Image 1 (tube, helix red, strand yellow):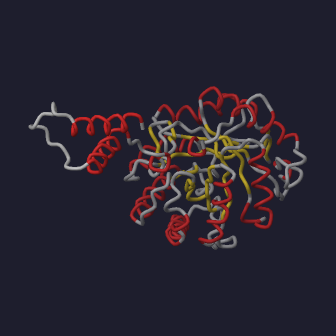
Image 2 (cartoon, helix red, strand yellow):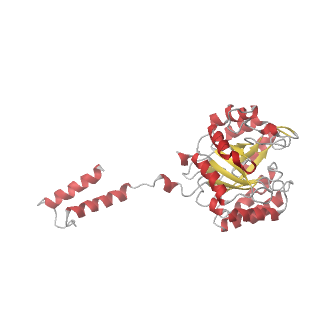
Image 3 (cartoon, one colour):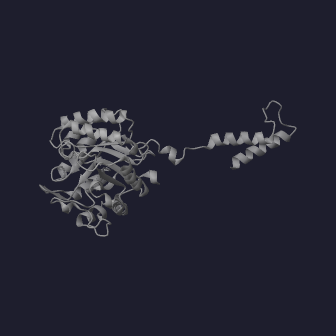
Length: 352
């Protein structure tokens, strides 16, 4: 403001002074002079605002996920079973945000097995995540453990159908196409499926960062290190990241945990632990080392899951109550431990 006023004063003095050179192109009136100085000052001092800097959304840069402001973002969050407990969404999301989580992965339905989420229902939950300053990762759970490429194609068609819930939200919504598609330890089929559907999603105008779960019910980390580069290359935007799920197979000991992540990062791929627990049907999980390794190597993680587990794995509930007033021992590890949410989670800079 001071420089603008100084410019105006200089022009006025020049106009009224007998010493002003006749060769200078001087405005004919003081109002015109003021307008000229203001225009010049505006062009010299303007900087892009926060909204402008966020229009690009998340991007993958090598092993890093960058937010819309170009800052590295490390996911620290929780999975929420929206598709099966829609009436608990608001209560659960507010409680998850209170843990310090910067990300929440949302179980959605495409109508292939679970109730189909509409554009409106997806908008409602992602808008709530934005209000609570958490990044939303949307995943379709209907084809978990299935092997048919046709089912993945149908899932991609679903995302194209509801793309209005994705487009324009690239800075706080990530698309995890399908939960744990390919139950077999078949990296080639996994590669064939994703290299087929990702170009279709991009051609439909979906620009959000894409997340791809590993084969083998999410636990076959080698599918990422063997074929992840091909899957990434199939994305014309180069904006695809990967997720390994760690239970009794991929998360059973330190060597396995480190290997599943490091093999991917050594290939220059961006990877997170998209699900993990402390125990599972076939054995123990080294959850403390998962948290430790991720903290030391800036790897994101999303714990499974807030509440509502059944079928013998109720022990994976992080909370005893939907509102989070009572956490399980597993929940206390994820939220309150040395490498848990309260001590390691940082909000995405777009909310800053």
